Structures are given as C-alpha cells and as structure tokens.
Amino acid sequence: MNTINHFLFVCAGNICRSPMAESLLRHLAKARPALETLEVASAGTIALSGNLPSADAVDVMRQQFGLEIATHRARPLTRSLTADLVLALDRETERESQVLKLRAPVTMLGDYVGTGEEVEDPHGRSPRHYREATLQLKRLVELVVARLDTGVVSTPEV
Image (cartoon, helix red, strand yellow):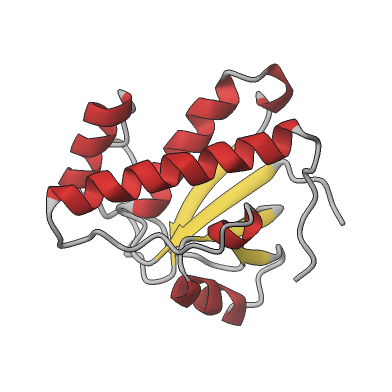
C-alpha cells in the first residue's frame, strides 16, 4: 500500500461530476493543515480536451458552495496523467478507467469511502439533478477527508 498525495476524479465527460468533486476536495482539504499539500485533479473517459464545464454545474457549485469551476477545462483520461489513486464516480467509468491500465489503482469513490454508491451523471438533466449530485458528492468527499484525517491514506487493494 502506498500513501496517497494525488487524487484523480474520473467521470465520463469531465464537465460535471469530476470537476465538482475536484473542487470540493480541494476546498475541504484547504481547511486542514495536514492535507494542504494534497493534489487533486480530474479527467473524463470520453472527455474532449478543452470543453467547458456544464453551465448547470458551474451554477450549482456557485450557489450551493460558493466555489468557482467556470475556469475548468475538460481533459481526457490517459496513461500519462499522474495520480496515486483514481476515483471513478460510477461503475461504468471505473471499468473504462481500469481498461486503460493506468499506473495508479482505480476504484469507485463510493467504494473507497465504504458506501458503494454511484454518483449519477446529471448531464442533460434538470438543475435538480445537478443539485442532488453536488450534495451527494459533498457528502462522499467529506468521507474522503474523514478517511484522510484518520490517517487511513493508503491506496486500496484492487
């Protein structure tokens, strides 16, 4: 098992869920001196490089958390991306990420924090779906931070 210093969140297009999770973990880690050097990034299994984040994702992150993701630009998941742990947001992106044989272990965020839940893709759906996804992501990312705070910061056996 290796210590985790760099998380990489992965979803499909890297325009909604993974940038929201990235922003939330960065924000929550900043408040904890032990986690201030944590690196957090995101990518997508079918992302088109440079795509803008979903307007609904930008709006909900501003409204619910006061966090800005408008400057985010999508990037595809490739073997050249560095991370200590890749956290997929659903089973499909977990499988797609594992097929790439990345250098870092891949697991689903819900599995990493012990809930087993998937974060449903809100893309193309109503603003309510974006709000639900962000609240779920906040809860799951808080569990990541709690796990890091307890000192259980090693990669899972995958």
